[in-house]
Image (tube, rainbow, N blue to C red; front, side, top):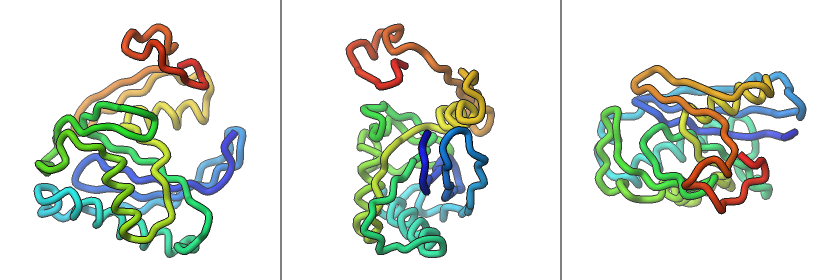
Length: 183
């Protein structure tokens, strides 16, 4: 039922993607504006602040082409982060370890969306990281958006991953956590 313009970042390897999509409610046709950009090799092993500042700068340039960067309305940003993370909420998670050629030591065991949010603030972007997912969960969400019967997703790429929709009360480590969907 979501309506409006949303932005997303996808960081999962040596390239990252920025996209803008306009949702029109019930299963609208998605025609995202997408840009892909390589990550300079030195940013994959340097400091986390440098990596996230680079990503925030790229996002700033992308937004500038499509919208007002100085908008008083906070834009919502989805963040696909395809590395091992301990998810702590719908919009936060702690990096367990890097894979796929990344080796930024100061980011391990740190909150990922928070590091991105700080870079967005430094860049002057009025955006809030509203969701943090891995690529498999993003694929499941997109599939479910188009077909409500979609309950599983698989990624076969640099790594392999799968996910499925489950009732929250059936997951031992999630018992007691409240979700609006029940799953």
